[in-house]
Length: 335
Image 1 (cartoon, rainbow, N blue to C red):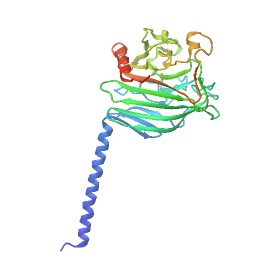
Image 2: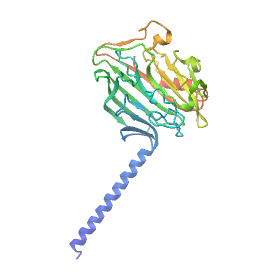
Image 3: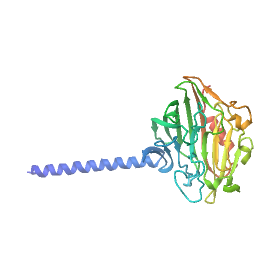
Image 4: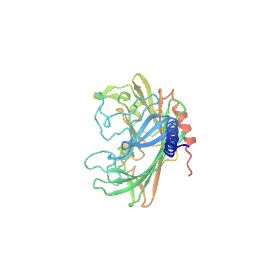
């Protein structure tokens, strides 16, 4: 007769083996899912975005002046945005500490500066993660945020969505959508060049280096403007290209045709900043102050959509004009 104690021992070992096998199977499944597709997860106070198991970017939202994405990495792992102020690496300028890789903010919202990080500036504060989805081909992050003045008074809200697409080649694509809501009364997005949907490029990609030394980077717009000509002009898209560790890369921003005031004006600088800004008409066109004001009535809202494309090669070799046409076909919005 099999002793009861030995039977229980054998049963326990069997259960332990089954549990271990199940855990190993779950672990393998989790690793497989993380290694394929677009995986979003929270870690170290950021939302990390992995594409096929490799870091693409991180969404910073805690204890910051406004939410932003940093870094933006190419398919082969190169930093295509400036690393300071998140990291201090040799050879980078420490100008404009409010330039955080990829972000959305504006310098005049009901008179409040949400663009800079001065003592008088306001802040954009995340209130909630509405949804976070991983997927085989697309990952999505939607958040709700408060726009506050320097004293903490709420002046507006936004709901913003980042969609990260699994690449089919050496490119990286982010679709960005933001709905600004006048929840606290009328909102005026004021007439200033200081804004709005912006990227700060890697230092080696600058069109001009410090002390006005020539750089190897170049700006190109859909309207044919080059380098310094791009600033203050309207265009459907702008592409900023330049070298990183001996190879040429670029980042393009596409303005959606159904955005208000399409095609947008561009706050594009030779030191590495470029931003879609449909509000700064006074600065861009030398028109009367306030010409660019855009008012959202109390209880109303307004939506903007953009695509960001990271690519190898220059503007022509990357076929940016054709890629913009793809964006327009892909993101169809009802009137």
